[in-house]
Each structure stands twice: as structure tokens, then as C-alpha cells.
Amino acid sequence: MKIPWQELETETLDALVEQFVLMEGTEYGEQDVSLETKVAQVKRQLQEGKAIIVWSELHETAHIVPADSYDDSGAMP
Image 1: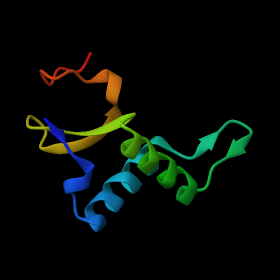
Image 2 (image 1 turned 60 degrees about the vertical axis):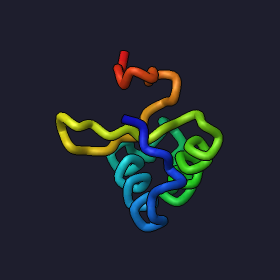
Image 3 (image 1 turned 90 degrees about the horizontal axis):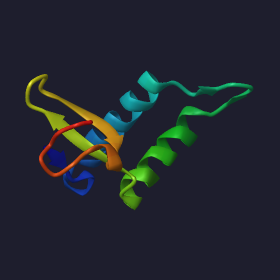
Image 4 (image 1 turned 180 degrees about the horizontal axis):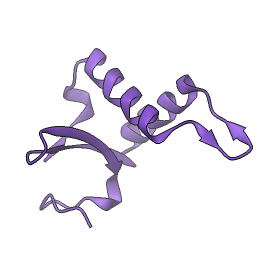
């Protein structure tokens, strides 16, 4: 199930995005990206519709995924 990022409390959205970034990491080869920069990039992707937040009922967890990897049936490829 998709969760509109606009409906989340600011603190909840911040925590979700930060957790996502920390799990993904900020090291990109020769160049590291700061946590703050990466959090801003992910928030921008959510605002632009390039990424979405989905809720897994099975695992009772929320995840940030690329928008094109999710279809309206809720299936992930």
C-alpha cells in the first residue's frame, strides 16, 4: 500500500528517510555524500514522485522504493 509522504508527520518522515539513507549508505566510490545531502536528495525524489513510501502489511514496515518499481496492485517486481 502506498503512503503519501505529505500525510506523514514531519518527524516521522524525517526518521523514515534518515533510516533509509543509513541502510543504503552514503559512500559512493571515491566520493562520500553527507547524510544531510543524501536525506535532502531522497526527500526531493519523494516530492518529485520519483520515489514513494510503501507499507508492507506482511512485515509491518515502511520502505522507500523507486516509483517505477511499484504498480497499483501493490506488487513489487
